[in-house]
Amino acid sequence: EAGVTQSPTHLIKTRGQQATLRCSPISGHTSVYWYQQALGLGLQFLLWYDEGEERNRGNFPPRFSGRQFPNYSSELNVNALELEDSALYLCASSFGSDGYGYTFGSGTRLTVV
Amino acid sequence: KQEVTQIPAALSVPEGENLVLNCSFTDSAIYNLQWFRQDPGKGLTSLLLIQSSQREQTSGRLNASLDKSSGRSTLYIAASQPGDSATYLCAVIDDYKLSFGAGTTVTVRA
Image (cartoon, rainbow over all chains, first blue to last red; front, side):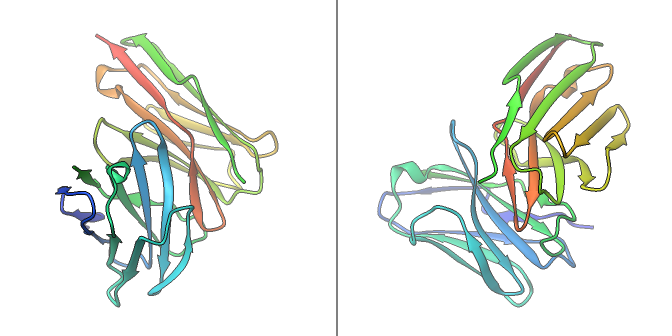
């Protein structure tokens, strides 16, 4: 069974540009979560999608947005990139939201220069 | 707001020694608790999931306990090996998301 896959592995963007990150969940998982892991700040919750809807978001500005497609894959968009957006972005999937356990992808390393 | 604390922040032990990693959380109304391992620059690998109704889970050399009433979980790793060197993260699952501790970075010396 394929795990959670994220693409691209690495992404380098210039300040002010937009970045798009993609995530494919484990087959059968309907919930997708996005987390940001910036250097020295730990894992911060970004967004939760379930059944195509945004269910909740963390304490991030509106330029962080995304969507979930009918096949449950998801993309995270970051507009007007700032240097401090440089981080490892991790996607996780689960079956529903009631704590069946989460499976993470390998992440996308975003570097803003 | 759930706060998750992991102690110690870093640990260095000789090969063969048993490891004890601690995790505490402030709100005991959690669904479950999950332990992860993270290698430098990589994603998270799930180690153990403890359902809220359980008190412990075991997988090979790993054993994790959960005491919801006191807001604590402990991860035990028996007979440590150099390949166990990594950062170990504790995460509590409440409502809709994971709340993570800052992690314990483990170094096992050969």
